[in-house]
Amino acid sequence: MQAALQSRFKPSTPTDELDKLSVKQFAQNTDRKIAWAIKTFWDWRKERMVDPSCPSEILWCSIDNPSLCKEYLCKTLCQFVNEVRRKDGLEFPGKTLYNLVLCVQFYLEKKGIFWKLVDDPDFVRLKFTIDNLMKKGLVRGCLPRWSHNQFHSTKKKFCGILICWESKIPTNFTVLFSV
Image (cartoon, rainbow, N blue to C red; front, top):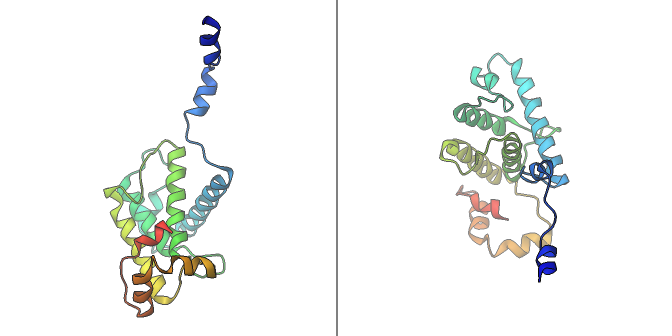
C-alpha cells in the first residue's frame, strides 16, 4: 500500500521549473506571428514619428511602456489598423487586421498586461474600427481568402452575408471572426 502511494506522485518540482510553467507560452508559429505583428507595429510607429500631422498621443504611446494607458493604446491601435498596409501597398483583409490586434494582445500578455483588446469595454472603439474596416473591405470586394471548397462549405452558414455583400449593403460582419 505504501509503495503504491509513493509512485502516484512525481518528485517535488524545482521552483525555476514551476516558474517556467506559470508563464503564458505560445506555439512557435504563434510566436512568429506575434513577432511579425509587433515588427509591423514598430515600423508603422517609426514612420509616424517623422509625420508632423500624426497626433501626439500616437507618438507617446509605446506598447513597451510599463505605464501604458488603455485610452492611448486604443486610439493608437485604431489608427494602426486603419493605416497598416501590406508591403505591396494593398490593404490587409479584415481577418488579418483582427489577427494583428490579437497578436498585440498576446505580446502584452507576455509583458504581464492582460487586457482583452476586442472584448474589453475600454477598447470598444477598436472593435468598431475593425468591424467598419471589414465592412468597407467586403463592399469593395476584399473577401477573406477562402478556397473553393471552404467557400461552398460555409456558404449555407453565411447565406445572409453573401446576399448583402452581393447587393453591396453593409451589415455587421463580426461573425466572420468565427470562420
